[in-house]
Length: 461
Length: 178
Image 1 (tube, rainbow over the protein chains, first blue to last red):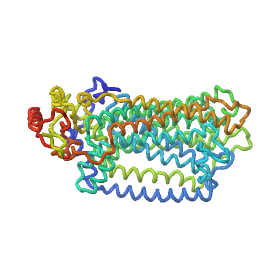
Image 2 (image 1 turned 60 degrees about the vertical axis):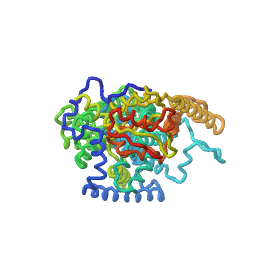
Image 3 (image 1 turned 90 degrees about the vertical axis):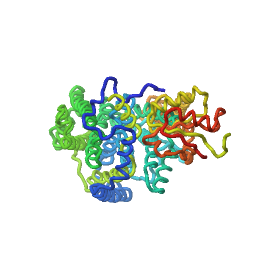
């Protein structure tokens, strides 16, 4: 197995990439700094504030979930022909958020990009929580959540089985696989750091909790070799997985014959959009955590700069997707495709469409400039625009395309209800509560990987 | 000479280079039952201590094919035998649409196999291990590197082994109780 991956940096790249003064230079200092966030610094006031807001949103989520599960999906503004509404829009949005985590932790590991270490742990945690949030939407959207197990192939006396020739039947297993592999990848990389937490904890009961979670990790060289090999194997299988999961979601649309959906570009377009929006979320968290938890020596400007460049690249792919969508509509010479493209850009929905274009294709052009990529405030604002823009993109794809079916008398405009708004806002609670607990109780950065980089940087200085 | 309630003798080093040198010397001396403990992955250390690549990757590959094969069969069987359902006159055995989940389930099996092989190979979870009794063992996860020669080694001799470890330039050498 890949034995020669000693440096987590590309060949020829010197330690000059870290142009901020580092707060650490030895492995011991790295451990002290990362575990200090949890054991020494105490709970910052902003954490409590954020946690209370997140708990409030979680309460709203429970209300929304129970209402829709018990009273039914008619609470949403969906009706014929717009039968897919917020349940599906938010499924795509949230699973897209998750994609950056796997992309950073798996794909960039294989590419030997050592800067990924600063983000990999919390981005992977973000993936896990986002997949949970995303996975609940299709169940709600089914309308009869108590029968959700019908979508799995299991022996039953009704002799009914899922229709595997439809992409909709693929989603459940694709998302379940994604969630499972992400969890394994995240946890296996976390084990040695849980061992470090155990060793740094002062109180016995705290040691016991971390020690149990670490499964008695002792840092033996053979275990390190096994862990290293397993992490690489998981990275190798997670990389095609992350591409495939959002491709499957893209196929849900591309296989249907609705104008605006029936495009071959959808799977790659969806994958780029997913990584794009996920990187926006990663950047927001990176900047906020760095400021809020005092991690400037560990998450440097160079790290953030690299992630911003990646966001720009994926954003340009998404922009290309918008161009091709309209080109394909024109080139197909298909009346309804052309009509949809015109309605989308000039009809009732025009503000949403152009909002999407401005947020995803225009504003990100500022990232060409280094001064913008190194400006925390600018980065957070741009990232928020990207998140908003990518949410709009999913709205443009789902309800707007459905608003213009082949039967022209059915053309309509989607009507919102308060439950649609709750379905957009409340899931942030379900996402932020575990995220805030994670940064309070688990090491935010991969300690062992950062130590390794620290040692190698030290050797080169 | 070996004590039943003694796990071995451990030496504590300040950096990975000293540990690596000591590990190589121990192997040259003929010690076989040697363990090293480090805060992070030190490349090549396990190989110096006699680690050979196991069957892990092949098991993962096999799991990938088992999962993929199983699910392709399942989809084929369900669509053609168990619940044949004609949609727009399309063939029941349209295998092209089965390929996606064939891949996904293969990945699922491979991922679970990769995690399981790691736990089998390392023997984790293992809440207790004698090395935790070594002096400064709690630093093994942050700043210190340990080399432990176990009493089970045929060459183990309390005095000679301790002297050997002391020659390697450690910060200290301690006896590790069970």
